[in-house]
Length: 418
Ligand code: SF4
Image 1: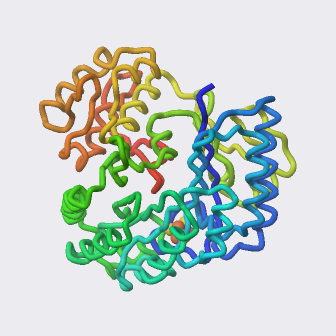
Image 2: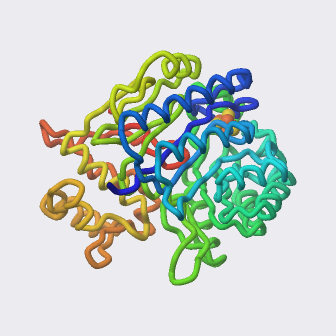
């Protein structure tokens, strides 16, 4: 069996950021001990269901704020992970962290527990923008956290930035990117802000207190950043992600997220976590208390279905083909190869999507690199329009406009009718 990936969702946050609609439990730290017990039980359930050690090559703790979990909690979790999974020798083990929540001792402890990669949510270098977003840290804390992570021996340090804020100018975006580059990150993720319904940010925009984010301005920011990061020697490998160039043509990319985009199987542990196993897309209940209760009271149904499983979707052949396209094309270097399409769907790429591909190549959105199809620079800017061309309604064969939802990590969280 090919190695799987493991995603752990840690929903706890000190407070809720103004733009956030992720599964979070702000101000619920009292639940952390019970939540850890529930995670341990969910991991052990996999061990029982599998009946053998499953190989795993990446582990990712995302959130929420995973850096709120005490070291002792991570030591217990890794003990259980190693009893249920055989981690490959070069396994990539990532923690997402908020810069204001770590210090040197904690980072050293994380390193000893097994983490080798850390991703800090920097978001902006401007105090005003951090305040607008509801972030609790300062840029000084980002600088300190990155230095402490390097001293602690992390092999990869990644930074997240957000652009396209209401009223944000190109100059302020350039300033944040330059401050990020000064920290010599191994990896950078640049995410365009989306105003999610139900968030304080959406309410401020709705009441006219803030301007609507300007999509054209965001496109200019993205285009500028692509050129700037290329000049800085960073290699883009995904629409929103760049890695430092390593020796022998390698890139310091996030192998865990690449695993999602390649559509390879992964387990999702924790409240609201998504998984992809045995052809099923599954997700756990996002309710933290319900998650704890169900993991405590119920047994795992099968390898794919956690006791906390809330949604399960068996992918049909058409959806599988769509997914191969709109996930794989996000990988700007690798794209979708004819071989991968055939291996994952049993069909020939050109037979299924020949007309769409020819059109998109003619419009300058896609290009062939040997036998791999990749997005052009124009296609990257207009990614969702390209992806929509590969979505079908199976019964009527008419194109159905649907919205592809992504978590900030790029993880697909759903495809909905619009
Ligand atoms: S953006 Fe991140 S840190 Fe802020 S509330 Fe959401 S999950 Fe927590």
